[in-house]
Length: 307
Image 1 (cartoon, rainbow, N blue to C red):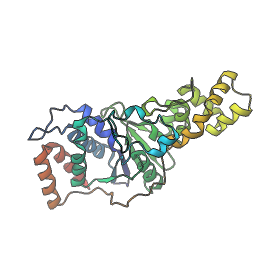
Image 2 (cartoon, rainbow, N blue to C red):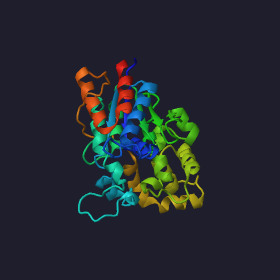
Image 3 (tube, helix red, strand yellow):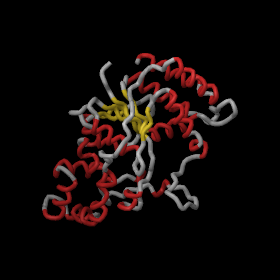
Image 4 (cartoon, rainbow, N blue to C red):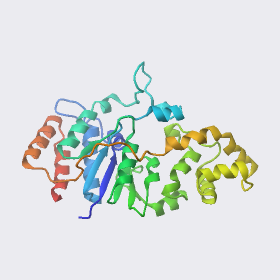
């Protein structure tokens, strides 16, 4: 089996599992476990289809880092729960999903899947750092387009894109990125900055959508080139020049928010997949019995027997 690292955008996947599996799926004592069971089945499919040799469940230790909010205050602001709190912003997450997060971490641990986050950073930043430093090919599994900026055919870094569902996974490479958006992986962060992203509270440049952003980057290389042309050149229409100049304050800070970090200090973990030992199987079966995860745990441990 050829070495390949799989990086899971874990929150993206457990949200998908939560909304994709009925909340009638419960433990023996009636607690919802739909997100946990669904996530385990998602991982089973990924391991079976893409055959990674190493895997990391990347975690949001901070889903809305203050350093990003300081740069763009609207960043993910619409996702903040409307509660009175003196601590960090709390993400709007259904109670029955929030309650399953410890179980999800326990289930991943019991089958030997490393979970990794970093204080002050999102899972995207953990993924960016691991992908950038990896010495083997990488598959990033996410429903978040922001991670397209990490796609790199030379280093064999792909995105397994889940937005259309687990039955319609898209393998995103440099070629598919060019076909779909007209940009390269290296240009994607600038593309997203210009276009904006309402799901992250990033306004973008007024009136600039996918096609205009791609055309600007195709003609001028990167965001710095686009801004330079707007300020000093004559290739852009007066209307487009004005829109880019009007967005100067946003464009000065947004690239730092959109770009995933690639130098996060991380704990070194053993990420290699392997079959469970008899003792580990006992622990897995105990957890499965307690929480009603039996079939999902069994499917995943069976998939791991190849290692």
